[in-house]
Length: 151
Image 1 (cartoon, one colour):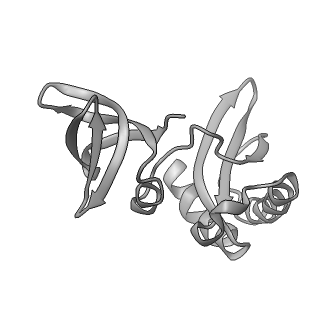
Image 2 (cartoon, one colour; image 1 turned 90 degrees about the vertical axis):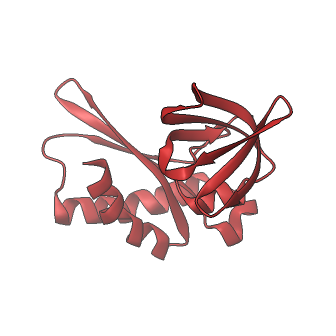
């Protein structure tokens, strides 16, 4: 469901000048909560996201969701910025945050290790390099289960 919602909502969000960072859907009681995390597009990344930006995206997304009806039943829509510990999902995310401290968890261990917390040193040819305690670790992007900034 998450991937289908990403494909459905990414175009209208990008058309408004924002980037769809992530989507979460959580069942709660008889309904659920659909959380959409947006950011300014890379070329405007220094501007941040305001409450007005979230309202603008919420309105546009609501129209798409009402028309397409991909989620059955009652749910609440929440739109917000990704926060300080934002998810890193795409190659562009990793490229944008080279030099920042990150957390990365692999799907399967690499040399006996699944979790890495350190500075993102580089991104090239489908691999990121994370420096942990002075040691560089090359992590293939396709093996990363989840990653986020670590302020």
